[in-house]
Image (cartoon, rainbow, N blue to C red; front, side):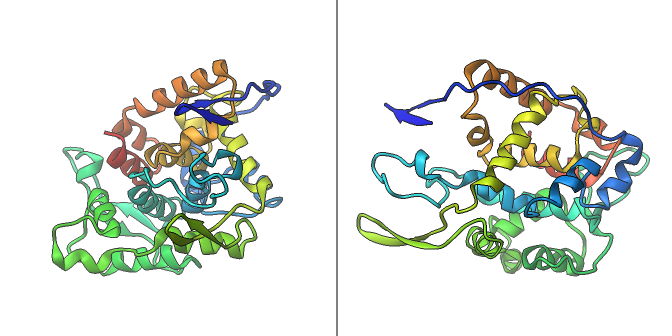
Length: 298
């Protein structure tokens, strides 16, 4: 991919051969949600690659690669775009989504009047440690908060974007840096000091191209060769990644290498996912996942 005059030129690539298969039946959604939202195919794939959390995958998609660096900072890469205002709250949404997929949190009961997803409170379903510092920190905040809060409120609290001074202590700080260090420990990124004209900046360049390429391939296949036209038949974790990558303004990075026809088709299908009735979808599968989606896609 190259850039000229502010326009992104997408490489034409040979279309991958069509593959058969769809997600598991929606009748097993609850079981899949308690297993990190992965179906059997995803479990097989995870056995062959580094397992990442949703927030790590979204951050990885947002990191600038060597070939995507601008002319101004030709040798600079390994950081998220300075112009991306969405990724901060998006990563906090990923944390809530990850907790939901792991069966750690749930929404309060809808009641007789079937209240909207965004108005229902988040409750702790399982407070056992997740083995991830950010997830455990967020889970602790949710558990200790009385009365409970909505998904939208938790996104604001964890992002530090609240006017309530009593909730500022809930902010998760340095999330991007902490996630990058996790990826360094997993051998996906490394750490470097790079000069940005007047100052030095710590960056985290990619060293494991295979891991990121697999994520990109999964996203592309989900809306092209493996498109099911039914969100309930898609792998829950992969569907969550599509929504959160879109909300974090990094999904375009995964589709940029596609040829023009595939790019337009991919974006058309993503728009179809964004136009779904989230309240209706939540009645068929993990309500908390759809509540997070609803908080971002309005």
